[in-house]
Length: 378
Image 1 (cartoon, rainbow, N blue to C red):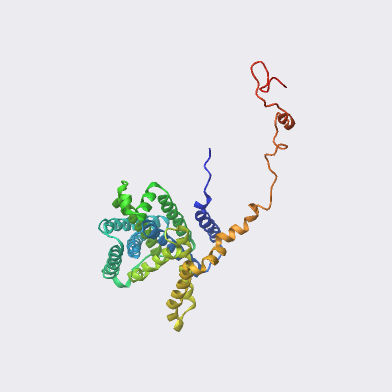
Image 2: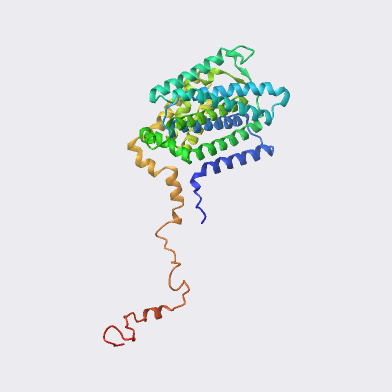
């Protein structure tokens, strides 16, 4: 018997896949995209990868990490350096991009293992402090490197990939990130991770290797942060460590919290919204008005958080959310007022016996001689 496909598990693949195919077709067919639009698409893809990967630790594992920008920084610098070294031999093509991507992801994963082994023995605020310290240490190390290695405070010069195609690769990596993270969460390993989040003592008592699964989730999250870092290096001409500070880690965390703890689709929407807000505010508020950017950004986030969590707005949210709108549009398919013909009626289903014959059958019990139970009367 065929298993029923749960389409809600694949809705994010379908939406992002269709968006990627449509935009790619337009770009490859010679369609003109504004440079700022292409850059925005690249930033959105990077933010989605960061938010989804951090959601694995914060939303599903239940641990507070404030060093996600540090893993991204490692991936950006190492991936960018490899790309710069390989450019004379391989050029700035897909092979260079793939090798740099693998190196950046691998080094970020290694950092995740090194930091995760001691740090994940801590909980709550202590883990947040350790991961925060890691991010600041990484930023300071790259900021104080020599000109021969990573160019110090001036930043590492990296080859900028063709804007016309980079967003395509970026959204393909988004789909890969979603596939890996969601399949991990829905596997027995993901169930072990969520069990640790719900009750670590109970999970340990049932035989779950808590340290192993914490380290696995943390390393996987760091790996995709490294992937986002390599994308960042190919999206910009220069990688500067100051971009990967504490504030950026908080911004990624806001994407996860705003989208809903443990919600992949929510993280995707929140990452897209916050990236769009940041980019548009930076574009609109220029000159003397630039000082208002952070103020308006914070105000918008506060209003969104209040809308999502205020008890007084619960009835309004339930009535006017996207799910309610879809149910209203599809309600005619399940409207009980529209009674359809019963396909199992006697006059529809073919039978070998007429209905009047069935009703005329004598159901009175008989003995072996054929006499009825009421004294032989028929």
